[in-house]
Image (cartoon, rainbow, N blue to C red; front, side, top):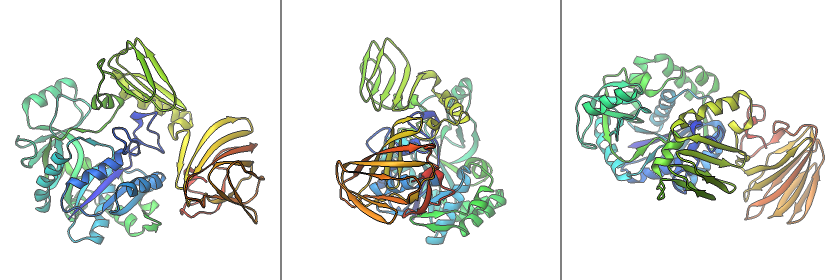
Length: 480
């Protein structure tokens, strides 16, 4: 049986400002009305003999990941939470340990959550080819049949050259991202493939190889898994052991050193969407070679990608640009320089600006909130609570809150009182009062919150009780 393991731990900094640390690119609908994570799951429908989906993600993304998975599949085997990012090899080791605890000789299919694959049938054929090799004990990677001398990908050199999807070939070497001249030489010589970062192997074989090549990593992963605790729908790895684990990719930790590595060629319209230029390439162009998303008006604009999310964007007389608008940030870049967007993100992080971490609309397991206005001693937010959901029972030391219901029904706890409010009704939450907001209805509850006080940060919350299992002091990123 194939156990799909979806790796959803990336940050996607090159797709800022749409991709943020707490809402990265794999959780965004960049190509269709489904998110990239959901498209990865749906792609599995073309495969045979597939078991429940396992997903490994950052614990700060866990509720978003769970909600998106449940929206497209009922076949979820588990969501494993990484307390810290340690690259793909430790994630694969933990997934292998879990699979072996539940299945007899499982074969893992490791898939990044943020790739585009246009031809699902070609992908399925390649997995079918790799399955036989993996069942026989090979560690399979999928090499993308190169469309040209790309310098943004690492390469895999195979022992023999063949037609895509026909066979698997022993790996001779993995090579780093080349310069242009070297990439052209690779393409001319044949036998080179782009490194996709997708893998297929028996769980027991991978763990045996890892034990020989990096026993410290496996020992710490085993400790983290054996000491893990179940938290609602999630498996929370032991933080101390996993954080102590060496950070390394599957390539470096195992594939470059093992004698079992083989590559299966894949020609399926693959793209890892590593920058805004990739979205320009992947989408349909207008007659001027532009890709326009959202409310965009242009005059004499060519070869550009313009994406508006919350307001009208106009452009005149420009060429070869990337323009991306969100409610709190705008990116303007030459299409040739989009790899440098990460430098902007780094500067935002160094300045401790929230635009690196979150959008103006922030998602929580109960719904979302969005800052409408902010100034000294007051803040206005729009809060949306999903049907049947509830915020944590909490109190604040530095702010009071005024709530006005604009849609739906609110059930509110304030101290020892419970009140129910409908549209156009309001209430006041005094500073220091214990309170909770719930939606008992069947439609989303929308309200306007006006905060007043000396400090209005999200960390001014003392959580008393929470139905989503959020841990008060260690979970500041999921306050409320």
